[in-house]
Image (cartoon, rainbow, N blue to C red; front, side, top):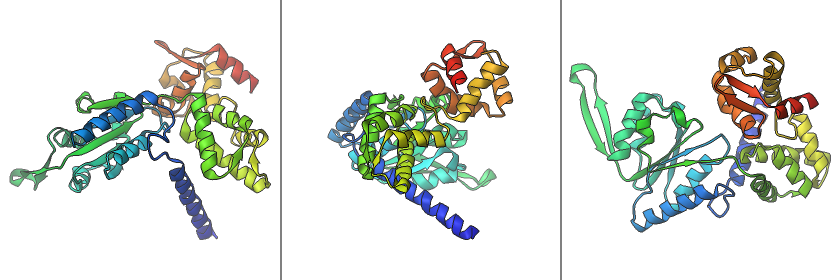
Length: 331
């Protein structure tokens, strides 16, 4: 029985990943939002193609789910290049990076996600690869060790991170283009929801589009996730269209309110308001009270709360705004 359950879960995960791939834009014409970033990338791509060169190395940063991986894939497609994808935590040893770089072919794109988690040894190995297309390898150990240098073909490194401040200055300076992806506007999220609904083959009422978009935290990944769950609900309910009642029901089932706040967001705000008199409270005290890692609070919870004005940062610590107090008390 447990084997069947595991198999079913794996099938569901694989199916969800297939759907996510189908919803992913494949070129700039399909990519909604981030207008400034798109325009700059298109200019760089056009110029590189005219020179018959690889596009310069790129650094993309911003919150999770804003489209950094998608942009990297689009850049590779526009350049007519193959893309190799890895992440900072996967590159544990110099051999891991060497294995990838040694398979790079002319014009390829290497995409490294979570670049802020690249260790210093790997980072130093990247410098000559990025600057002069050299891969330096140390063969052997001790007094018998020797350096071997391999020439690399033209390639583009695209790094993505949610915490650009954790990247070292020497690494950041080696990128020819650095782009910040910001939260999307509500109209752009609504366009994404309508596009995704069309790809999924479901009809959706304008009111339902608005409800899903408003709860998406200005993030395409979350908007698509909510849309898929509402689609699940109408399918088991026998409905033929996503209506506002179905959208609201899914938000209620997943304890998501109209602002897109989940229970952990509300718990953070309640803690500041009820245990610390609304603040200010230091991040260490807040993390200890919540039993959460400081990095999770700073990277996952705070950015959206700051964006919508429920939280402010001061030199003394975090402060819940009057809007936050009003919202929490309504719940």
